[in-house]
Image (cartoon, rainbow, N blue to C red; front, side, top):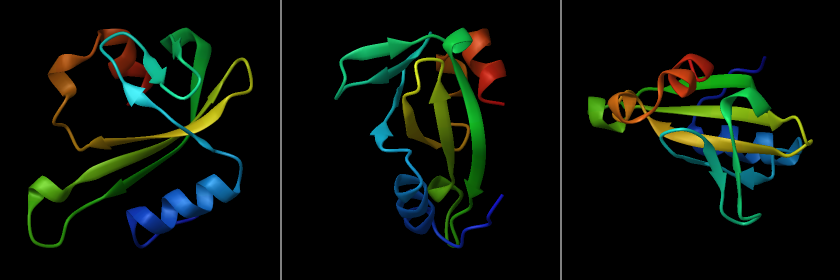
Length: 97
């Protein structure tokens, strides 16, 4: 797995590798707004995880997930580091660990 210096570099590279959709984190699933679908934890896998820490503030921390669904949909999820930990189901928490 490649190490990236910046979040934007990682996003660009993963998009070039076919992770073209953007996912949003919901309490019990991932949402792909452009396809108007929701993907449950049992229907996707996390292919890669990349953590980025802000230089000046812990508020700048983020995690980038490269995700593939059982249906072949590949995309990325960018999440603030730990901010939403209490707002998702246990299944989602385990999947994104």
